[in-house]
Every structure is written in C-alpha cells, then in structure tokens.
Image 1: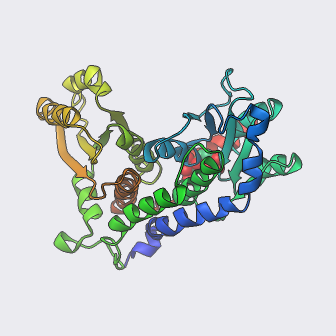
Image 2 (image 1 turned 90 degrees about the vertical axis):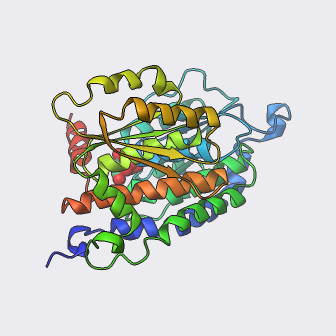
Length: 360
Ligand code: F6R
C-alpha cells in the first residue's frame, strides 16, 4: 500500500507543523548577535539618528519571502525594501542598512548584493545556514544569524522570519518583535491544530483535514490567489508554494490593482480549455471597499472560474492573520502534490538551473 510517508519522503507535512517553534527559535538565534547588529548602526556616529533610513533585505525565493512577510506583519518604523535580484539599488548608502538572507548561503543573486553592500560598508547582518555567505561575512566580522540546516529553504520560513524580525528590532526598524513573533506562532498554530492527525493515507470525505478538502476542490485547475495589503504577501507565498510543492503553475495578484487590468484578462481565460480556480485571502485588515471589490469581481468572473474559496483569518492580529493564512497555503500546496502522488520536497528544476548556471 502507498502510505503518505512513502510519497512525502522528507515529511513536508511535518515541517509545516514546526512553524510555531521555528518562529520562536529564529528570534532566539538573532539574540546571539544582537549587540553586534546594534553596533552596525551606532546612532552617535549618525548624528543621533536612532535607526537606518531604510532596511534593505536581499534574498531569493524561500529566503526572500521573509522580507515580504516582515512588511506584512509589522508596523515598520523605517521602510523595509525587499531586493530580489543581483543588484543593490544605487540609492543605498551609509544612511541605510542591508541584511542578506540565503538559507544555503550559495545563492548567486544574494552573494552579488552582499558584495555590493560590503563595498558600501552597509551590511548589518546575514541570515544563513553557512555557505559562502557565512564565510564572507565572518571574514569581515559581520554578524551571522545561523539557521538550523537540513531543511528546504521554503520550509524554513518560520525560522527565517523570526531571525529577520530580531535583526530588524536590533536596528530599531520594528518594535516588540517578541510579541509579534508570538502572534505569528499562534496564527500558525490555529491551523496546525486542525491538521494534527493526518494518519497514514489521505482521508476521504469529512474525515479529511480541511486543507486536503480545499486541495481536492482545486485539483486539476490553475490556481489564482488574490490578497490585499498584508494578505497580498501571503497570496504570493501561496503561489510560490503551489509552484514548488505542487509542481504546478499558479498566479497571485492583489486588490485593488488587479481590478484595473487582470479582471479583463479573465474574459478569455478558458480559451484552450484551462480550468481555473480562485482563492481570496481576507483578514481583519481587509477594508470594506476591498471586500466589495472581491464580491463584484467574483460575480464578473463567475463563468470563467471553477472553485472559488474565500479564506478569512480567525486571528485578528496582523501577524497572526498573516501566518494563519500562510499556513493554510502551505498545507494546501503539499496536499496538491500528495493527491498527485508526488513528493512535495524536491525542486529538481531549480537545482538543475543552478547547476547549469554554475557551469557557465
Ligand atoms: C527551495 C526554495 C527556493 C530557494 C531559492 C534560494 O526550497 O524555497 O526558492 O529558497 O532558490 O536559495 P536559498 O534560499 O538557499 O538562498
């Protein structure tokens, strides 16, 4: 008999259940180098200015999403600018600070930003398990927040986020990191507790965990995930998780902007026989004008879209709702793989692309 463990060989389902402990662990790990991070912004040498003008966070894929989630979950005291590419923006200067995040420590885009940031002497810290990023930083006495190894980067989102929250707090860019990380952990827990006993096989009917039931509704469709404000970052995480865990195309967009372009694109969405489904991510921060847009959009695209699921966060804190909705997406994406009998963990195409680039 095919059991879940023989398909989910690296236990991606189990990794989701560790999100709350990861979040707390990430914050603790940042404390090991907190004083060094604080010293990377000595206010007295910046005319008494207590914090950097902007915090630039460089990282790709699963390592980059932490920056988007930081913006979504916290009230920021300075802007946080995620950079997902090779180049550090030209405006980054001594008034700003840069954090480079790479789970493996080997990602070429992040290493390229790290070199540029070092040339400008603006690196506050790196967050990584090791690799070149850790070596370069250590050689220059730059603080390293060391992550636990052995995971897929995207499955380490909890520890990555907790660590980044701690770094941002040490730089005075956010307050109350401990409370916010705790809210995030409770948000994740509220979904995990509904998925505690998965058993050996994929349960049927009412015995199935709720995210598996959602995945069954979405199976065989191309999923579009729509959010707004803080939930827009989560929509993007859903899309990336459906890509990497489910090995499926998926799309994300945000209200109200999508009402000014993508709405029209639905008109011919079913040309060629593609079946679509829509997930809407809603939280206490979703305003009534945006909710009205969601209702009207749903009606306008009703004949093009199959399943439409609106997931409304139960947790009312910003961080709690962000991590609650994120955890739903992580489960759904893993179940989409398991329904197809596919191991969610390996990302062969990313590995192959990185290998081919290294050979050039
Ligand atoms: C794989 C994953 C990828 C990586 C990305 C960058 O699980 O999530 O999106 O995160 O290829 O690699 P790292 O995280 O090692 O810098």
